[in-house]
Length: 314
Image 1 (cartoon, rainbow, N blue to C red):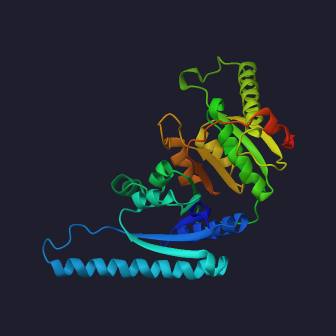
Image 2 (cartoon, rainbow, N blue to C red; image 1 turned 180 degrees about the vertical axis):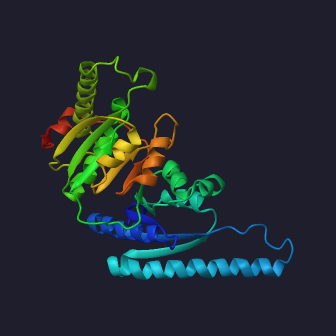
């Protein structure tokens, strides 16, 4: 099996990690991938400064704990996927750096959501944010308790910049096709604070909404000819909403099967995760898949001519 036909699952021993395992197993079954469970034991903090024997004992103890977490996760994974398609690896090192490096040999990284206090985020940072912001492949972040109920058969893709989002939408289209789900292409905009006043008429706001919708529909048309677009019919719906982006997107995707977002392209070559993306990883009630920048490469007219037209809804 190709290395990229693997899904890497970060194992942390928490409920978020178990939700990530369930999500990854469902993805692996859908696409025929292998599950690769990885746990990283924290690096030692200058062992042996006072007593070298105490330091070595602590290192061994940490490794035993990590091995136990990984063993329990592997047993659970084998109840969700064929045993011969489950492998596990125990590594010592920084969790975020290690997962980003190992991600290059996979198709997808799946992590459990982390709900840390503000103080914890300041002093320890977020493994989830660091991996989602730097991994060379897609990263899915799964909230605790997933799945919370019956799926809505809907995938939402949040588009920030219509000019270069065709690749992002095409990838989301593939996710919807794999699930037999509807695709909602969503753009959220907010009136700049100095201009958010009664001076702007409802007619002007409606005109802005209509112009943005036309741009979004043009992006969808380009996505249909993108090289990563699926070769099956996908029901699509375009929506333009106003409000605080993270709040509106989270609410729109609350009952969805998946929310797809992209990293900011201008931080070349890997892009970066903006404040809206970080807020969605923290607050979303459905899995969020973060894609590295996807180039808007479309197929030639001859290649796209054989692709069936997709259904568009209002």
